[in-house]
Length: 340
Image (cartoon, helix red, strand yellow):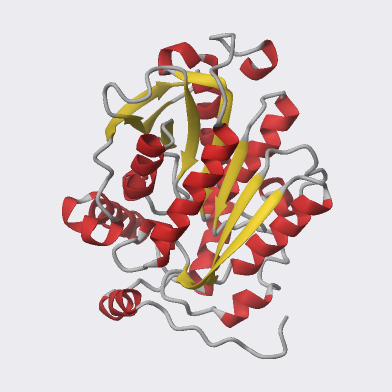
């Protein structure tokens, strides 16, 4: 920690949004109230009028919802592809997981994901994972992310992707899920080229509230400690092994895909991102840490009110372009290890 405390000011748009928005009492919210709040928030996030805040999709990408049929469930995914005639088949895959935890939708990430699809170019598949609720812990959302990744890789030719050029990405809870997917990928023999973790939550254990940024930004507009406490209660109910869904405490982080860790500085979980980048390096996994002073949690989904979002999107695009470069793999189908 520096001896001098740096005072940062949030963008005006975020301050105005915070003044207009009224969150529920997270400590007393009932399951019924949570569902009502979640449904309303997701409708707003997906609405066209919200794009003044969440950003207009890139015109060079086509966006549509699609279903992925897994052995025990069907999941929706939001698929972004370069417009017809741009990129062809055998494109890189970016498996994306949106943030929010107990709220959120893939549609809120159209601005960044459509840009990646058009400009890399790549196929971006964003998982509409199960949201946290009583009876739906984080482990379910983690499985959703991993199972969709495996499904798309196993059916690479159908999806028009190159199974040798794969990256995972996510923000907040989605960053945690992407980090765990990278760990699972190594264990299963699936080779990833990159992982992009944006303001990730990486530690849900008893040490979750010990990081200095938690106290420093406990009442930040986009994420508060009271909201984090509800998130933790839903994500890891009593009796759950918190370490199993905390990449910070993984026993072995060696040999993972190179990581870009993006940290906004006005964020309670900023120190979790910083520390996770350090842990990756301790295991000799390449990790680039970039901080965005004055940016709040979830800023990459708020380009209309956070100027730093555009710079971060450009950095992410260039990182993935470098990691995903290369000719299409010789085999149209994944290896046996990749398919597992």
